[in-house]
Length: 178
Image (cartoon, rainbow, N blue to C red):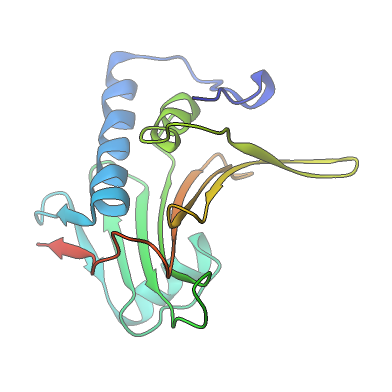
């Protein structure tokens, strides 16, 4: 497990209620992005379609919604969004699926634990360019078929991503059960 540097660590007081909401975001990340199956009762959130999906994808995922992509807005945890994007395979090292959770409800501590949850070796590497720091860490394992990314947005959103390579041994269709 890695800890984010102190200057990007949680600046909000940890309360039992905040920790419970943050844990709910981590759970939906594990279900949707790592297990590939998310149960989504109407009270928890909904799958967005059309213009609404395009607006959310453009704002939070810097993307447009393609055929087969799924965008979810959650009621609980509030201000939490999910995008599952499918891409065409061009080679064995192509990224063919991205699963991204963006949340204003997840703590950076919980996000760092979620990122390293099923990782047995190696370490997350910070994104670094000379004289610049980006609050982004990556854990890239093409040999196991995935790349994980944790980033902290300027507007205080926490972004967790799992990108799946075409050679992933466990690649299956994601399922959102509403």
